[in-house]
Length: 289
Image (cartoon, rainbow, N blue to C red):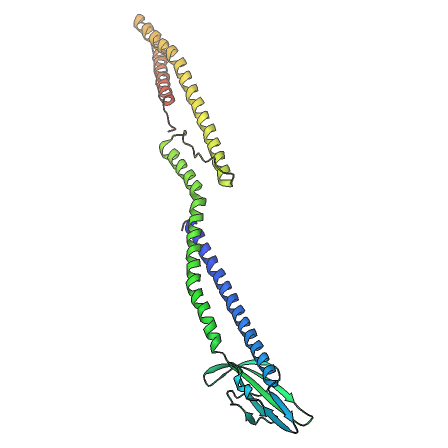
């Protein structure tokens, strides 16, 4: 697996984790905001409902406007739990001042109970109930938007990660291509040629080009030295070869030991001449073998 693909996968994984965290935070915040909304609504409805009640001479008078409180159902119970006004929508023990969420009749409800005390012997439970159906309606657009935006964000993050990785590794690919060209062709004149920028890869490119320049210069000096040495050796060796052949031709009756020695000299001279030719051929090469 290539580094670019690995980086793209890491970007995508990071986007997934980030999206999951953001989705969880948004869901938690939405639930918290929704609970605060229902709690404020029920408290406000309780205060408004209390203003519609009057207790005189042991009788509880209920104003007709109590039924006009929007979206909140009001029910009144005696201290013993007997319904005296409204309709029972949830079966739940009374609990003073606490907002609770319950399921009753297949529906979700928010419930708040308030104990109203009129004298030392008379008390009434007022239960404020609000359906949670509007909560689902409020969550639905958020979830639909999340289903659209989160995959889009993940896709854009993956694409952006791939483009960033590709752009970041272009200098590396260029260095690799230059090195492969030098290895396959032996041309030390090739350079990476990245000079714009101040990042680490640009510095590495300049360092690599400097190293190649020094190597190329060293090989040029070596070729020049080899060429000069070969030219300097070729003439004396040719002269030695000619003198040995001439001496052998002019003195055919020399001792056997002398003839063997001259033959050895001619062989070594021929060998050195071939080495000189090889050096000349190497000095004429334009690339590193």
